[in-house]
Length: 84
Image 1 (tube, rainbow, N blue to C red):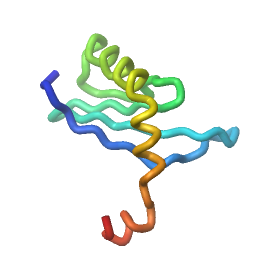
Image 2: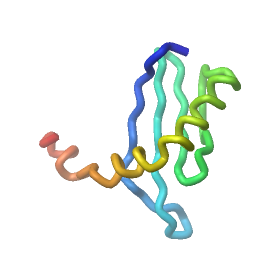
Image 3: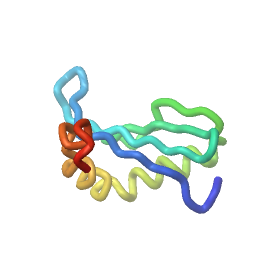
Image 4: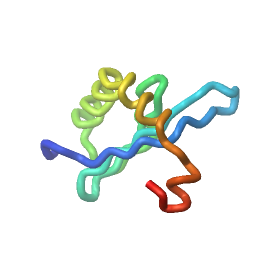
């Protein structure tokens, strides 16, 4: 895994029970993983080793507050309209 990888945070959505959730996507070249907060679990991955996935899970756990803060500031309509 490189020193830096690309990370994308979704806006806050809700699961089937109505609980808030945020998806986090990690990319490192052809490698891809998607995690979910709360829980900090990896829900899908391709190319990352188990050790790398453990590091991504730990990152989501340690940075949960920052990730949630980022998700709260996402304006879906502004992004859709290209007004970022």
